[in-house]
Length: 215
Image (cartoon, rainbow, N blue to C red; front, side, top):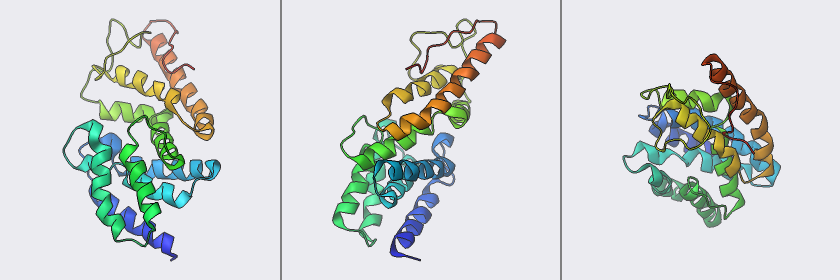
């Protein structure tokens, strides 16, 4: 194996040990693996080093394995990953680039191309059929929808009171994407989600209008 392949293999093994049996199903190893593949595609399209994109993606959610506030899981991920990266044959700039992207991936910052690629790949995994499945499984303890106003236009609850709140929240992620490549990939995914919502409203006898996730 090449040096980069060896590094990726070590990072993957280390990350999987922390994410194979998560308490939070929406951010377990399959999520990280999907985001890694998407991040590499975006990196290739956006002129970002795919190797760095893969490393950052593999590490971005390891902080979720440690109890703490949701908003700080990027910080925890970077803190956990730093000692591992110190052991690997990476340049200092590569280490810092990876840690910066991991640290800020759950923010609205767009300081570096690597951070933008990681953030976009992560958000794309919340759209489309996979996005719907993640909403259903991660919020399975909540009611599916408000019977009085299922998927109605207008404000919805954060934190979500229903699965439909979570779906509508995720549909808005298309508006936070940074790269042209991600926005292009997102179009078919968001149309699928709109179609699902329209069909559900018809099935519930509530009409066909839904603006969530519109651009």
